Length: 444
Ligand SMILES: *[C@@H]1O[C@H](CO)[C@@H](O)[C@H](O)[C@H]1NC(C)=O
Ligand SMILES: *[C@@H]1O[C@H](CO)[C@@H](O)[C@H](O)[C@H]1NC(C)=O
Image (cartoon, rainbow, N blue to C red; front, side, top):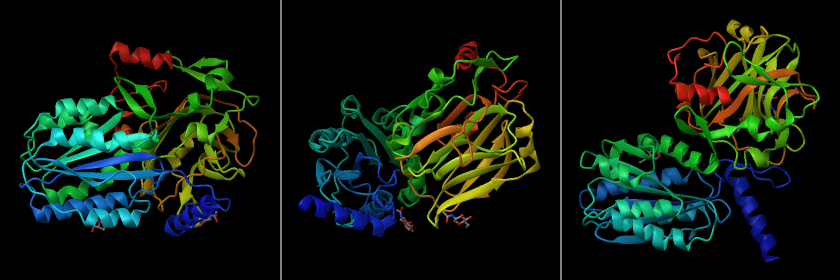
């Protein structure tokens, strides 16, 4: 009974906050809900000063607003440190965002020296070690000066415990090498610099995206020299087992899959996108087709078969449609109807790339920017339905087409790195690859 009441209570709180629920109580999965233990390790040394410390607290509250707080979702802990670390907020001590944010607001500034290493070790021993949840663990270290103790061992001990460390350096007194030693690799992803505390609000959105990538996109796709966080949807849908016939994208050595109408490329969304998608991502696919009807290259359906997210090719009027969720009425569709979209329908190989952000979606075809369209803010997705590729719109029937690649990259920056080198005859700024990279590409 108590359990039942608790459930109803959670349901009503969630409904009030974000209307994240469907009628049957299923939760929309997104970064708001992805189970995560998140600990902020805040510099409270003399150099910060009480005014800046107030700014840091507001920043913390602003970031926390992006998350649903609770034992099933995200729990936030806070350590303030100077000579000694102080446990300001234990992980999981607040079961509502309001209480947690009030607790953040009432943290008192310490003042003292900067012993960052000790603070990281403290977070490991007294916050993370006390959490029994098996999930994503992240620590964000915020500092404005060089540490008076060694950070390297504590940071490595944290990484050994599967904790991902971000380091934020504020002002000119921080030491680059130290921030890099604290943070995970690559430093370009895990180290941030801001000129002063006023500027810290500028990295709020990027922090939000990065924190989300950690919890929502744990898988990595090998791309050239680096592993990118994301989802290889073709692999996720078992294309290697389901499609036997391979076709070369001659004259390249790259091979594609020949999808026939007998194949069913479907999988439960909970197996492909267990925590939904991040706020920004890049969709990339390379395909060729002759279909002259309306079909979904990729779609994520609700349990009753409605598209929540879809990339649709309209063979009738030669346009491309992008469907996603919306806070307005649940669903929004944008249509790309630029004349260059027609090239997709010429039966040759083409790469489609969609850069989706919180504000807009931009279409690229064969590495050329085509059109940008605004988006309303989106909601999370229900993961109880299916994720499918190559299906006629509104039907279960598979489209006959050839596909070489179909991926989601979680880091929007990948949009600037990805080229259409697999397209026959494609010439780009990255036209030549070192042999090792070329062989990786040809294996796909
Ligand atoms: C917090 O959010 C408010 C409202 O969006 C904004 O005005 C303020 O600058 C933010 N502060 C920080 C420190 O991020
Ligand atoms: C939401 O509104 C748009 C127009 O703004 C409409 O095209 C669409 O069908 C609506 N979706 C739902 C699910 O009602």
